[in-house]
Length: 612
Image: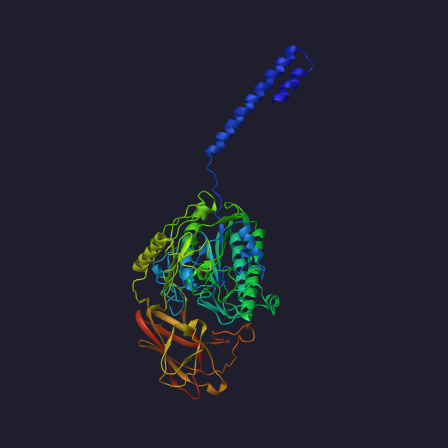
């Protein structure tokens, strides 16, 4: 404007004309300013539209150690997509989880140490979270999100312990602690038995991508939990990934490794498959143009399932030493988190719920207090260095404590984790105050959380709010000489059922009476067809006969890249056997043969009850 006025004054025109033009210009400027201020005032008085809530994608891998990523220095494999999350967001150098699967999942879901939710084991119901615990899915669903989980649940099978009872709108996967076959297996979709499509991790990713696309099309924010079940055994992986490692000998080894095994090769192949699927999800977010406004989290549930490279850290899965509980953690949220951020402050799985609730700006009110804290001040660098806390790692009778620089192991030995990651030289005498502080934290934790509390929770059978109810061999007890297909119950079946006095039984409680259609999943060779069986439930009885042969082979061994200890599986046949009534209250369901014309009744996998 100043330049415009000066130009007018410099022109060869009468003086009075110059004055007139100058006054006119000033009037126009003042009028323009008046209307600008008016418009600004109008804008201030109009309610502003709130920013759309961010989407959330959480990747949780199974038995992937801290050292199983190229980002952390492993040169034997390449994980560029997972590495990208750290480069475009934040990575945590001191993030800790539990020693095994189900406890870590419970701590992520509740923001509380797993003993508080009564998670005591990994199978036969001990992995269930108490029903008075609020989950992260509950909170996001209440905030208007659509919620979905794809993969391994491992925190309860029967509703309302089932994921559809813990805040998830959609569940596709399996609820057990591990699965017996990774190609086209029997899975479930919201309780209904379905057949998987291809390699499970690829399949889970396909379903999650469809879920995200559908939510985006509907204008709904989503919370997608991709709970991958690899590199947990059995060690199965598509050929494309296996061929990258077949016969390869690794240079980076754990001191306790004796060369390179096929188990190690398969684990790395599975990690590269995971990375490929992470890339597919990131590409989907980009195609939907929501990358900037999506929080993406990546971590693992415990240390590696074997002695693999850990850059010197001591331990593996099942150990409460550093290598058994140290996990990668990457969080990308371009809208709020500066790229390439590194957080050295100690943190834990219990911190993820408070952090995600805080980042998303949703109501985090829960009936019980969290043990975790929000890491948002660290993420946004508002308060990046504050950390004066003690984290506890516990599994069974093993317990250790971690401060910012030290770990007190299960034997009470203190180690300087900045200078002795292999935990080789105790420093109790050098730092007695630190040792005492961590020892006191362990004692408080034991007194408050580990008092002897027998698990008296019954299996709930036939809840009125859900249609499908699974009674697998996993959760059953037997009499006589009936054999379980593996010492690992999670994906097992019963065989060698040869005596009419032998039973398969479930003790439970029926929350509400009702009638249920019963489907049996079994196999039976032609020579054994004809057994008559009775299902008892209190005063109710259902009799049926195995009339049709179904004798598929065991599957899994041909796809295994390394020998397994878990059960092989079969293509179990679904046999509708009739309807039974269940009365409210405690119940014992019993399967018992009335006659056995052949050598065995059947191989038994599952009873599926469908409320009608």
